[in-house]
Length: 446
Length: 96
Image: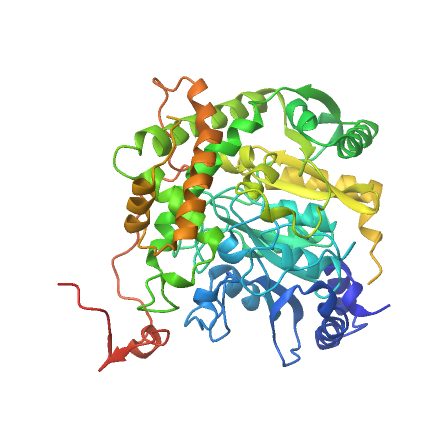
């Protein structure tokens, strides 16, 4: 077995027992990138040197000092940041080593990685299919064993949806758990970095490495990473999200119902729960995100760094235009304020649900990976594709996507949504499910 | 709140956003923005008069930090991404 195929947990154990060195793992990942990245096209930048550190990949919207950071945008094609994002800094402080920077939708504007200004990333399970997005490069690189783990970022779905479509694990922590400092901003009230890994156990290790209060991001919270005192499956009350199942395609729904049976067998109680119609969340999210995009992207003037505004692509412009409109005089109340009020309704709906439940489960995406080209026809492709991840993002809740089986050779993602700050609970449940099902052992041939 | 955007409104939004759009883009965005506004119009079905807005979900209030000098970028680093600079300054178009 090549070392690049190992999970982080296996890597840490092997190093502990001196079976191999971090440098050997790094070299095997670099070799794998040389072999398969021309097929997956997950990386924008690959580091030449071989380091004696456990390798990881990071989405190209995290600033890395003296290493090009593009956000897959022509505006930042040649941008070399003079400082590090906190998440990246914490990883290199923990002795992890950067393999390279991964492809994404330009400025994270999409759910396909097709709006990258450079190239499209391909799904390792079927190269004719999309990897999802916007962290598509990170998810594809993990599934293709080009790296031991990767970092993504999510505004709504950009960690969970590509993880589901590529068949890996993606954790979106609670908003405020992980610092946004040095992450190229999209929707500042929603953005959240998180790990994309081979197993849930790996996600927990990386989450604990990157999470926690950061003086450089005032929205981060100062509280313990462990909220629940003990974990007993028999005491866990799971809600199966009725409306989410209705939105999903039938074969996907079937996989989630099977996952619910697994949890029942493991002793959890599973009951159906009715939540606020997720379709309203598409509209709330569209308004919040595009308004915040228009504000965040106002900084690209070509003066201090990057190129001027003529370099925005059509998806960037479309989002800036709508956001500018919804924030403009006379329309702010009708759109942005209205969306913020319905955001309150969505938060309260979850609060009510969590009075009787510990977690909520459902599909991550209505369908498995779609064909390359699918995103170009609909001006709201991303928002509609992410219908089942938007409500939890709007409420700032933690959620994890993990493999729940296959439909026609394509992976399906199970989503576990937790109450705010309860990452430890969804991670424990995820580990329970993955130990029982072991879907992570099934890998594509490339 | 559903309405058709006019070409003049699209032009106005582009000006506010400092985007130079081609004729083709103006036409496309007029259609697509109108389509998006129609899509989100169903939010009107939800009564929100008595509901307070949520602007953030971290629960943090009044986040302070010590007012002390700490390391920051050097002038050279701060200017390292600028395409045009002059004697340690950024160069911009004249504003007035």
